[in-house]
Length: 126
Image (cartoon, rainbow, N blue to C red; front, top):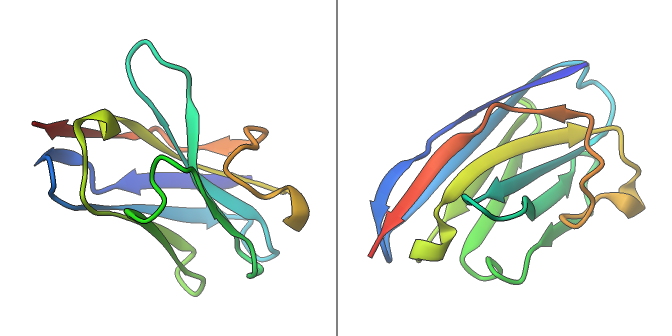
C-alpha cells in the first residue's frame, strides 16, 4: 500500500496563495499516479491535478489551470500543490490520492485511485 499525508491547508483571503504538500510512504518504488482532489460541502468530489511519478504526464482541471501548479519531489515522494490567485470557490477539503494507474490513464478526471489521504481544509474568504 501507499500511505498519504497532506499538509498546508488553512484560511486565506481571496487573491492569496497557499501551498499544499502530500507525502507518500510505503510502496513507492515503482511509478504510480498521484493526484489532488477537492470536495466542497454539498458538491461532488472533483479532480484538480494529476501527475505520473514516472514523468511526462501532468493534467489540470480547467477551473485551476494557470493558477495552480503541481511539483513532484521524487526523492522525497512529495507532491506539492501551489495555489495562487485563490478564489472563494476554491474553498474545499483537498485530498491527495495515489494509485497504480497506467501512464495514459493518469489524469485528474480519473477517480479510480486506491489510496487516499485524510484531507486538508482550504478556506478562501472574500
